[in-house]
Image (cartoon, rainbow, N blue to C red):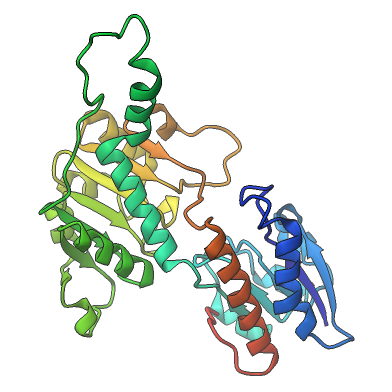
Length: 337
């Protein structure tokens, strides 16, 4: 069996000396290569190798760590790669997959559910940065306040400070990430309402009021998006949705950029309908040039890094390897197609 692996590692040293490339190589070895048969071959790939998936798939039987975009696993592509029987992504999310085509070609596709708490925490970080602008106020107090032109000025806060207590958090998508975001919001004393395609049952959801989408849009002070990108959710947040929202709503998106119609959001940001947006994702990423939303001072934007803490990186490798080995042993887990 020939196995292609997009080997996630130290992010160019972002994790420091303790978690260097050697640490991650050892992690992959312990969780994958040491558990394979002698005849299995592992080929380590960089992320760019699979941008052209049809070409990058080569003669692999298995690919671990693919970034699955809409219709990547098409009839045409799979017909050219009949040996390919397993593809996994190292992420929660993935693009549109034709399950019938995958079944026809005997292909199993899995995702890696590793970062529910991590991504929920990041959603709240974006929200708190909007509420308090800690970095901006830190820089002023430590550096700019003491410049000659600012001495004697009484400026305590450069930006409005927003309290979350008793405000309403609306969560779109009540899966694992949405649920953890709900718990964190409740911890700040927020009223939590949520919309999910299927109502969630069980005592653990009792603190959440589950409502229809239109009601969520009209009642929420903050809206945080945690649903998958599907044909039904693409451009879910469009002009009509913005019109239903409260004036001055805060919007957070750590799911997928294309869930929001970005042209319509630009209008809402420019008019003040949306007070601010915290975005870890945008449509069409990875971007090759700046997007329009970067022109607005009331956006907080990062380059899809909600998943990035070292703890979640370690977890994702372990889970992805376990998913693959489970499939290899005949009892696949985390199957999405």
